[in-house]
Image 1: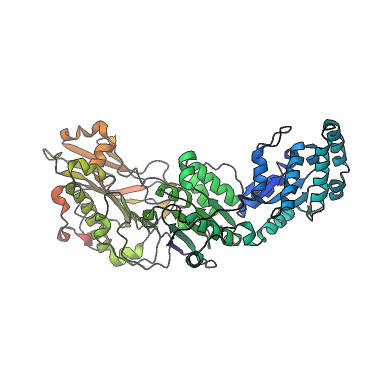
Image 2: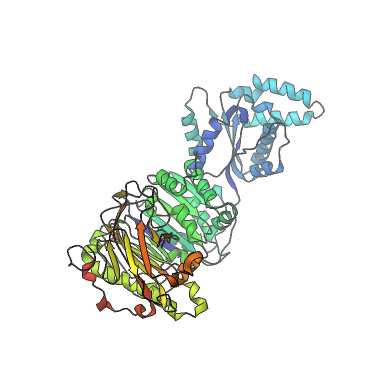
Amino acid sequence: MASSSTSSLTLPSSSSTHRWKYDAFLSFRGEDTRKNFTTHLHAALCQKGINTFKDNLLLRGEKISAGLLQAIEESRFSIIIFSENYASSSWCLDELTKILECVEEGGHTALPVFYNVDPSHVRKQKGCFADAFAEHEQVYREKMEKVVKWRKALTEVATISGWDSRDRDESEVIEEIVTRILNEPIDAFSSNVDALVGMDSRMEDLLSLLCIGSNDVRFVGIWGMAGIGKTTIAEAIYDRIYTKFDGCCFLKDVREDSQRHGLTYLQETLLSRVLGGINNLNRGINFIKARLHSKKVLIVLDNVVHRQELEALVGSHDWFGPGSRIIITTREKRLLIESLTLEHCKSLRSLPELPSSIEYLNAHSCTSLETLSCSSSTYTSKLGDLRFNFTNCFRLGENQGSDIVETILEGTQLASSMAKLLEPDERGLLQHGYQALVPGSRIPKWFTHQSVGSKVIVELPPHWYNTKWMGLAACVVFNFKGAVDGYRGTFPLACFLNGRYATLSDHNSLWTSSIIESDHTWFAYISRAELEARYPPWTGELSDYMLASFLFLVPEGAVTSHGEVKKCGVRLVYEEDGKYDGCSFPFSTMWPGDGDGGVF
């Protein structure tokens, strides 16, 4: 498994625009090649990151649209696929005339492909091309100057060196066309780099962070305020390096497209561009990972605003093959430092002090991880959701097991104590609470109500539902006995309170599809404000309860094999519990072989 890294770059002010909107324009006769050669060529171009315009709404007999003419003007190359019925379409001939005009003006390159036709027949309008023009001369006998232009365009474009598909393998022809475009000097694609006045050093900084040639998977963020050139430099870098990858995709303005079309649309777009068009894209996240995990890709996500956009499109380093590079541009600095994904970093041995803005740490299967440093500032820095995943980090448990549990329990209590620092009308800000996942098979004694199995019954004292009640803490030991099969979403444990569904973690996940080995323990704290906001139909009845029954289950279909909840514990958290006292927590009872406290 390749290693991974994440870094970022902050930019000063700069701006620029592309000269070319498209790398290539496809001119073709739909009835001849739409379902074969043209589709295969378009897929190959997109797979290599060549931004290609292909008109999918071609209607025979209609006048060529201004938008189509503009697309030709904005393309660096035009690939003309001459086929048997190409000349019978006035639309195709109008396209060809416009292409020739752009070539004569300079800067535009025509690439002819002779698909099962003799190039001399195209050049001299013989055979089926002669038949087509005989008909045109009848239809346009009052506008013969148009027919003359068409003949001139055919003659001149057909004299350009191109590809004759007769007696050649189709895939070989397509590969040569793609290579021809990729070998064009980068500066010819865009005036972007020349316009990056004073940005040379930033370009070099970014290239250094990307470290093209190394075999790890790298995420690099570009952060800065609007209009300072984040997209510009990302485009310039993309143009410079995209030929070094198996598949490429530049998603421009993710925020706008996400709002307008949704994340599923963006997932489809990403896969279509990287893979060159595929069927059944509705499988989303798991399909992206399945198709790209062995592929070296370059992906640019421009103008990302929400973490959900990152999670849906480039969720984790192990989604991508060795050597892949992911570039993210954003105005939101928090996006680059609130989420840290280190999955499968086999060489990672120590985790330093986390930034105070961190919300999510995923260290799944960091099998060499032995030590970490976490302070209370990690928890008290915000009033939002905190999630920590140390699944399969068994060395961490061996070397620092007690400290981890101490940190987790301290985080649980600090999360609850933050509520009492707020005014009553502000306590709703403390929303989701806290979650952590670690290897282990014991429940600390701090959880006052414990049970072997998936159900724990709590006898509630009189007046327990009072103003000092802050929330609920839970601890569950489980074993999934294998892979989480395509499961993504919440931590897959459901909770039923007195027979009513009351999941404690339906907002954010702690992992994606993963292999969970051996027993693990899940810690969670959910605030009173969140409980009351989430379950308004029955929270008003809680004050009448004298007995609470908690049942933790693995939802059906969440895993390939049946998961098992081995033991569980809960604690009602009150204001007086918010003061952390390390002496009250029997940390040595958490890990196998460390004593006999807690439930085991």
